[in-house]
Length: 350
Image 1 (cartoon, helix red, strand yellow):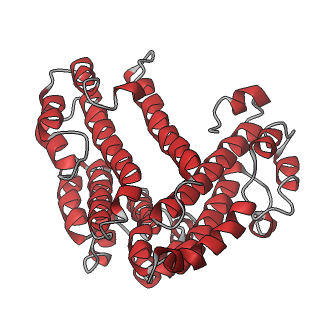
Image 2 (cartoon, one colour):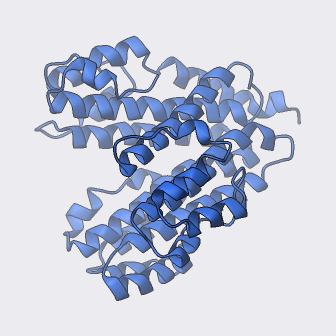
């Protein structure tokens, strides 16, 4: 079967979904809203209208963030369902990312002794429904503590990472190691899914996967150095698979005496352009994280017309949709906090 035939269905679906994306002018106009009521009224007759109409009063940016992400999941599901089988298996990782976040939320919620209702209210169960894991996740939500939560997930693909993280949790009562090992597992799964793509599809997914993975590796190691984490812990925190970050470079960052020395090593990589020093180390890393995200977004915009009958075209759309949701979340937070429109616009990504 030709690539044209394989991608005909998803390209048609993407055409519809792309026509519903909000333009830069629309999002900038949203930043000028006087309050969230006015903000949401401007989203009438958009793809977000139905979900916003079901938000219980009072409106908050946190509730709207959930709405925007639920809409994102809905869009992802439509695209995945219509994609060729092998591409769909790779694209499924976009929903797995939500599942990983769900598990991290459950662990933190259990540690904070939140009620079952509070836990369920923080989960994106629509992603779990498509992944066919909703029952397991809901059972995990019933656990009264972190140990119970991990035990409820013992028959899932997350068991090994959770087991290793639980040992650290029992030693220091911190959920940080659980978070990091779950993130590491996600990037290992992403790499495995990428490797299973057909040979002719890999070049079209390479930029997205390499930027995601290497960005995670560099930022995790540098944040660890800033927090003075043990070198052995840092080695454990990152996936074995890297793309443009060599093992020697990763080890040099791990063994650097301090954050500044580690940053100098990172500046010798092909990603040096994304690192811009700020007043503090954490600001530097936050800006770097945004720079990685923006670079992927620019790549998606530049290649949305040249990448057509391959997985790159789908990744370009999904990236654009993801950034739209990011912008809506930023705008709603800014409006709720009564920031000036120009201050909000400075945080948007176009």
